[in-house]
Image 1 (spheres, rainbow, N blue to C red):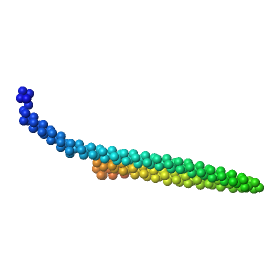
Image 2 (cartoon, one colour):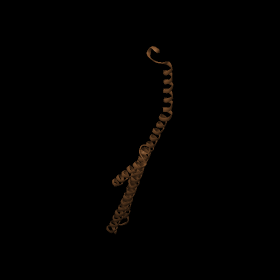
Image 3 (tube, rainbow, N blue to C red):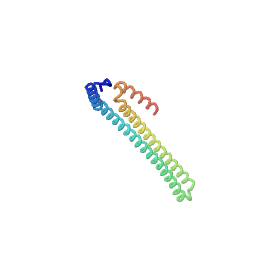
Image 4 (tube, rainbow, N blue to C red):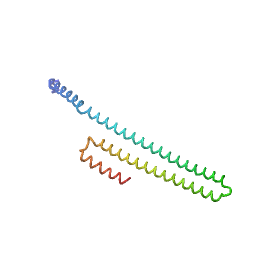
Length: 164
C-alpha cells in the first residue's frame, strides 16, 4: 500500500470515520426522513379515501333523487287513474282537480329535490373546503412557517368560497 501512497493507519481511520458517519446519518437523517415521507403518504391516502367516500355518497344521493322523482311521477299517475275511474259524471271537473294535484305534487317533489340537492352541494363543498384546508395544513406543516401557512390557507379558503 505504501507504493500507492496510502498509509494503512490513515486508511483504517478514514474507514472507521466513514462507517461512523454512515451510521449517524442513517440514524439521524435517513430514518426520520423515511418516517416523515411515510406519514405524508398516509395522510394523502386518507385524503383520497375521504374524497372517494364523498363521491360515493354524492352518487347515492343522486340515485335517491331519481328514485324520489320516479315515485312522485308514479303517485301522480295513480291519482290520475283513480280520478278517471271515479269521475264518470263529473269527469271534467275531477280530472282538472287531479291534474292540479299531480302538478302540485310534482312541483313539491321538485322543490324538495332541489332543496336536497342544494343541501348536499353545500355539504359536499363544505367538506371539500375542509378537506383541502386539512390537506394543505398537513402537507405544508413541516415545510413552511405557521404565519406563511395561515396566509396561504386563508387565501385558498377565500378562493374556494368565491368559487362555491
